[in-house]
Image 1 (spheres, rainbow, N blue to C red):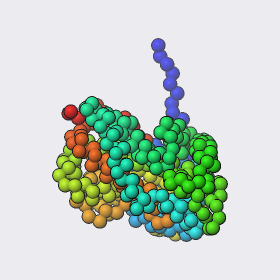
Image 2 (cartoon, one colour):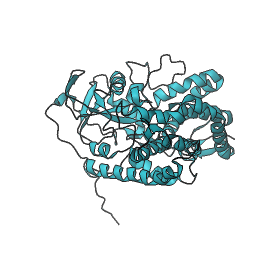
Image 3 (cartoon, helix red, strand yellow):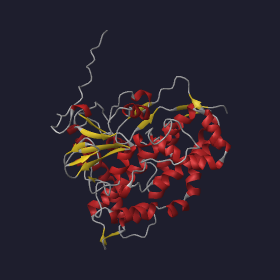
Length: 416
C-alpha cells in the first residue's frame, strides 16, 4: 500500500535589503547546513572557501550577515561599542525572545553580573573541585568499560558535564531530562519560520524561568556555597540582584552547563575514534595531552551566536546598517586556514593556537575553566581505561546545527 508523504516545507526566505549587494549573498542556513551529514564542522568549512568574502549575507533564518573569517569573528566579539549583544540569536525573533543575562547585555551594565558569575567559576574555585570532577568521570567510564561498547553521546557526554554541573549548583540529579528538552529548544529552536522559532524559544526561556524561580526564592539570603546561592546573593551596584536578572543569570548558568561541553566532547571523541594515531600521541606524553586541550577547543567549537550592528558603518568593505545581525560561527575562527595550517587536523604540536570557542572580549565564557578541566579529565581518565576504541561499523552519527551544534548516535566499540 502506498502512502503519500508531504514534501518538507520550503525554507522561509527574507527579502534582500537594498544595501546588500548580490555578490555577497550565499544560501547558508545556520540550522540546516548543506553537507551536515558529514559533520557540523565539515559543513561550516564548506562555507569558508578561498573566494568567500569575509562577510556574506543569507536570506535564511530571517536574513542576516555571517562573518566567515577568524579575524572578523575575533574583532566583532571584542567591539561591543559597534556590535551589541542586545540580540544574540538568529533569527531576530528568537533573539528578541531570549531573556538570559548577562549575555544579552553590553558593558557597563553587563559588568557586575559578569562578576557575579565569575565568583563561583573562576580558576581558583574550579581547581578546588578537580578531584570531585575526576571521581564523577571515573565512575561513569567504569560503569561500561567492561562492556566493550557504549553510545558515547548518551552514556558519557550527556551525563558527565551535566552531573558535574548539578553537583556544583546543588540541583537534583533527576532533573536533566526536562531541562535538556528546554535547552534543545533554546539552542536549536523548532519552527519553519522566524516567528515560529521565536515562539519556540520564548516558551523554552519561560520553562527555564519557571524551573529556577522557586530555587532562587529558596536560596536568597542563605549562606549556601553552591553556584546558585553565590550568584543570587551577589550585590549589583550595592543592591540585591533584581528578580528578573536573577532568573536570567541562573537560567544561563543551567543552559551553559547542559549543552556546550556535552556536545564538544562528542565531536572530539568521534575524531579520536577515527584517528588512532592521535590517540597514541595523547597517550605517549601526559604534557602533550594537557597542552592538546586547547587544540581540541580550536578544532571543535560548537557555538554560533550573533551581534547587533549599532550604527550604519563600512566594515571590511561592506556597508552595514544599524539593526543588522551578524552571525559569528566560532568554528570558522578555529578552522580558518589563513590562521592555522591544515586546520581540520588535530595537531598536538601546533603553536600559537587561536580561536573564539569561548568568545572574546567582555563576554568571554565564564565557564571556560570548568570546560577545559572537563575535557582534560575526560581524555586522561578515558584513555587510561579504554586506550583503543573505534566507531562501530556502520555508525552514522546524527549532526545538528544551530546556536549550539550537537551530535547524537555515537556508538563506540573496544576490546575488553
